[in-house]
Image 1 (cartoon, helix red, strand yellow):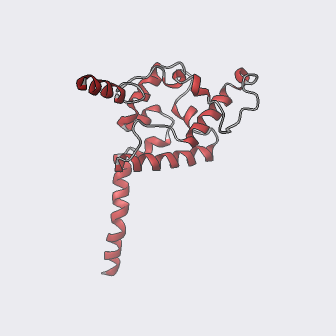
Image 2 (cartoon, rainbow, N blue to C red):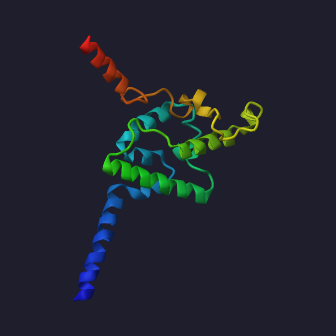
Image 3 (cartoon, helix red, strand yellow):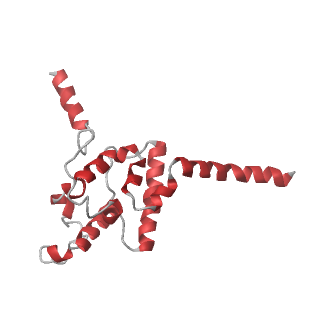
Length: 169
């Protein structure tokens, strides 16, 4: 009887975990397919703009946003997956969605890795020091094209401020 009780108790978290994994399409996150990124509706503007961007035919999300080596790639996927799952489940993510410092460094490494021949002389000794100028500082639209969606990167916040200001006048 105790074995049945403890078996049932153990089955609950596994059942809930399995259901959550299936519901959240967890297997899709192991693939490099960009459509996995839009499983969360908040990424739709980034996905839509990537389809119109200059890198659309040469790079997918993981090419820019994850390390290229196998182990670091899956460590970053696990870290991002945990933070995204927690943020979307608890609704405590930053709005508008923003890249973390760690992911910004990964993005910079990938820009330099792909464009090393082109930028070698422009970025001598490029480091990740506090005063580094990231590639996306000037080339913001390269990966995602022109901002789209709910009013660009601010998700319509600026529009709402302008409307509120106009009503108050």
